[in-house]
Structure formats: C-alpha cells, structure tokens
Image (cartoon, rainbow, N blue to C red; front, side):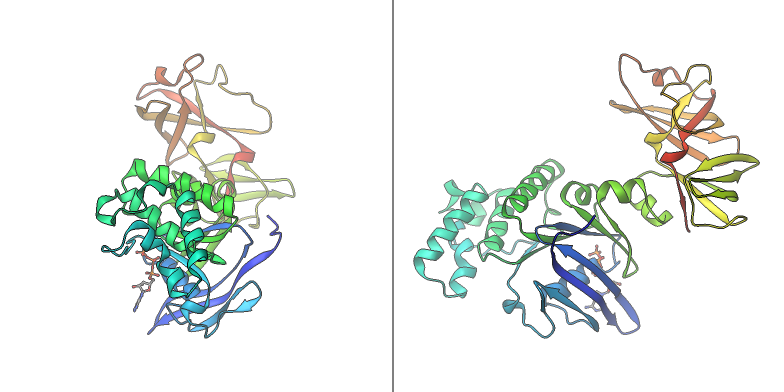
Length: 368
Ligand code: ATP
C-alpha cells in the first residue's frame, strides 16, 4: 500500500533498559488519517514504543517525526497528541462535560470555544444526555466514551490508544471497536493503537505492525499479514496455521516444488534456494476435505492432495473443524463452512481416510 501522505515517521526508534532492548530499531511510516495497530505478545515493546511517541519515555536512539516536525526533546504537552489508555482516569468529582473540558481549560481556550468543542465531543461520542452526570453514574462503555471525547476535543494531530478497550467485556468491546473506528474515520485522525488481541487489530486497523522482542516482524494490511505472513511467528500469532516441513526441490519464477515426506507439494514462488529446508504454510479455511471422488470445490489452478486420516470432527455452528493427520506426517486442521444446502462436513467421522487438498496459490513458503 502506498501512503498518500506520511504523517508520522518512526525512525530507528530504540529503548534500552540496561541490557534489555525493549524497542529495537523500530522504523515505520504512518499515513495521514491512517489507523495502525502495534500488535504482539506481552513484553514485545508495544507500550514502550507508544510511550516514546507520546513523549512519556525518552528514546535511547532514533526519532519520531510528526507532520514533518521532529519530536526529539519536545515535552508531552507540546506534542499535541491525544491519549486513551485502558484505565480512563476520569476525575470522579467532575461531571462528564467538565471532564471533557479539562484539557481545553488547561490550554486556556476561550470559554465559548470550550463550550462548542465539548458539545461536539459529546455529540460524536453520543454522550449529550449524560453531560451533568458524574463518572460513577456511568457504565464502563460510557466512561470510556468520555475518555475518548476528552482525548478528541483537544484536536490532536495524532491519537494514541493503549489497549483502550481492555477493561470492557467482549460484547461491549466489539461494539466500542466499531464505534471507535467510525469516529476515527469520520475525523480522519491519524491513530496508533496498541493491542495484543489480533481480532481487535484486524477490526480496527488499516495496517498492522507486528512486533516481536522489540523488533518489527512484519507490517501490512490485515488481509495481507493474515494470508501472507513472512514468518512462522506471524502465521501463528494471527490465527490457526498448518505447517509442513520439506525440502525445496524445484524453483521457478511462478512457483516452487517442495518434497514433503517423499510427496511433491507445489507452492507459490519462494525466496529459498534448491535444497533448502523450508516450511509451507496453509490456513485451515483454505483446506478442502474430501473422499477423493467428488471435489468439494472448483479445482482451477494447481491443487495439492494429501492423503490423511481424520482424528476429530468438531461442529461449531457456522463451521466444522476437522483435525487430521497427514500420511506424509504432521497434524493438520481444516475449517469447513457449514452451508446447509451443500455441506458434507458433518458426514465425516473420526478414522475416515480422506484427502486434504489446497490450492498451491493459497499456501506460502516461510522462513523460520
Ligand atoms: P504488554 O502487552 O504486556 O503491555 P508490551 O508489548 O507493551 O507488553 P512493554 O511494556 O513495552 O511491552 O515492555 C517491553 C519490555 O521492556 C519488557 O521486557 C519490559 O519488562 C521492559 N520494560 C518496560 N518498561 C520498563 C521500565 N520502566 N524499566 C525496565 N524495563 C522495562
């Protein structure tokens, strides 16, 4: 994806705590109006990276440039950055309207300007009818909306969100994700959200920066990183993944062949050289299961067919999950959609000998 106009540039950002590199040479560019998620397991450096952008942590090396201006040495309150954290830290003795107005009063804006911005903030977050309530008389979702309104009314050039919905239960979190995304898009505000929840990152972000041990592992649009991970780490972090280890036996511009337990499996083009040990990756929803007689899907393109035995069949409402063991070795998981008209998934049983099939183009060859 080409960024129309870069708004935030993170250049070689590094933070060392003693010998521990919490963030290690992180570089990425974020476009104007884009929402980017920093995603990764606990301790990978997401929060430290965000806090350096906010000015709350001083980088050991590197720089952050916002709208062409270096943030180096600039105090937090001079960065014009809006922040929203998991703990909303609303002032308990102030009403909703007063909480939202707080940052504007600190900036000494004229009273009429404060009034109109607070009204706009409450309208955006649908809090108009709660203006005079105290935070203790609000639900968790409403409190979070006050915190969001408070961050937005200062009209920040960048909005930073650190696990902002982490304290909410699942249903409320999903509703708030949609609401947050709508507001962010409507305002076109450049935003960075830190999360360890891959569903949240995929729902909210235009692009995901996947971090591991302080380093950037991969960056891309949700569909791109999900379908075409460049490492086993990313493939596993974003969902269930099937892996097959093999040896690259043929390499062409438009595809490769990998020997897996004596069988040849076709893959898309690979970086690896002939003779290299590689890992093939396929998502469970890209696997078709059949008895070999009737193909459950159209067979255009090149398909790999691997004989397998079914270990377990789990009905999950919209899908059936089938656990298999391939004859060539290794466990495999297939996710079959339960389309009532055509489904044959429920007809499979433990012990059945089947073919697990996937289109060569739906797989990837990974490093690691
Ligand atoms: P989580 O999802 O658990 O919040 P994270 O990805 O946000 O994790 P960070 O909080 O950025 O990770 O921490 C990255 C690393 O830096 C960790 O190893 C952590 O222990 C370390 N770290 C963070 N803050 C400090 C500090 N003030 N002093 C020393 N080490 C720190």
